[in-house]
Structures are given as structure tokens and as C-alpha cells.
Length: 228
Picture 1 (spheres, rainbow, N blue to C red):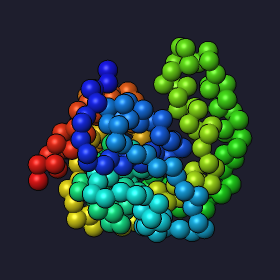
Picture 2 (picture 1 turned 60 degrees about the vertical axis):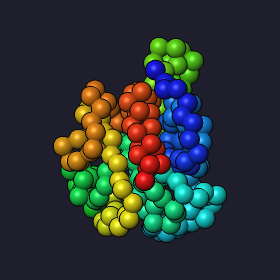
Picture 3 (picture 1 turned 90 degrees about the vertical axis):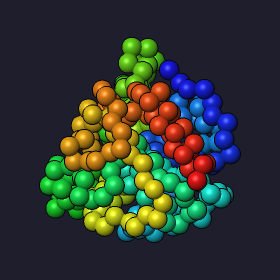
Picture 4 (picture 1 turned 120 degrees about the vertical axis):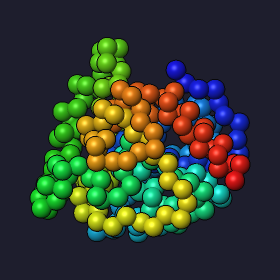
């Protein structure tokens, strides 16, 4: 299921998505030992994505690198590329611009003032029954997502959700952007995007459900950039 580890010196930085962490890239970490998935910083009050990305870049000890991310992590990676020596950006089940946000996200924008009132702690408590050994045995994918949501930082979750809804300007990225997307992604539907490659049968978390295709795509990007 996983690809053979890739022998390359090119640094690879991938950002996890909303309510997710480095566990979402477990198959990629096996294939790319040089991969780094930085933890989400505690956001400052009313901090923009670009300001957040600038602050995140200051914590990275990276030279020339490939930046990327899944879902919301891909959006942040576009801004992070402006503040690092990024040679390419890889979007994994993500989008390139606000115009590619699905209709439900655009309709939710007027209600973003309600985000502070979302009972994240309660929802995390309600997710506990899914994060059990029984579920892990019979539905490991649901178990993994429940564990990540249970362990996520409520402040980061609410900040990320608000930044998605008020994202209005895509950054100007000077390096190439590579985009991989599942054709059954209902969170960020394919019809709103224009990916370079489509993963057949892939949902929103293709890094876990289709690691072979994702790892192969990343490997091709790394190889292409190393030849330039």
C-alpha cells in the first residue's frame, strides 16, 4: 500500500487540515523520511492567514523545500510559500483560490460570527465513542479521524474555520503549484476545482485512503523539481 522510501535531500513540508495533525500523513512519512509536518501554532486574535503563515515560517528551519498541505493546510501552504524558499507547492485535496470554495461555504459566510459559539469541547466529548478500540478494529479510518478531532485545539479549529469563510484573496505564488484531488471529495467537490491529477474513488482524505497515488504524485514532483 505504501511506496518505498524515497532517497532525496529535498525537504518536504506538509500541513495537515482542519482538526487534523501529522497522523493524516503517516503513509507519506514512511515514504518520505525527510517530510516535516509542523504542529499548528496557537493563532493570535484576528490573525490573517498570511500573518499566520509568516509566523509559522519563522519556526521552520528549512532551506529550499517543497511546501504542501491537505484541505485547509493546502490553503495555508500557498501563503507559507511566500515566506519560505519554496520550490513548489503541492495541494492534496485542497483549492487554489477562494473562487474554488464550494457553495455551502460561500453561503455560510454571513454566519461566521457564530463560530465562537460552536461547542467544540462538547463535540470532542461526543466523538469519544468513535475513538475506541472497537471502532478501530472495524472502522480504522473513522477511528483515526475521531482521534484527531478529539485531540485538536479548539482555538485553532475555530480560527481555521473562520479563516476559510473569510478567505477572499489568493496569494501570488512564484513557484509551480501541483494539485491532486479525489473525484469523490464531497467536502471540497471536484467540480469547483481544476486539479492536475484526479484520484479515482478518492474522498477528502486521500493521503490516508489512497497513499499509493499520493506518494507517487509527491515523488514525481520531487523528481521534477530536483531536475530543474
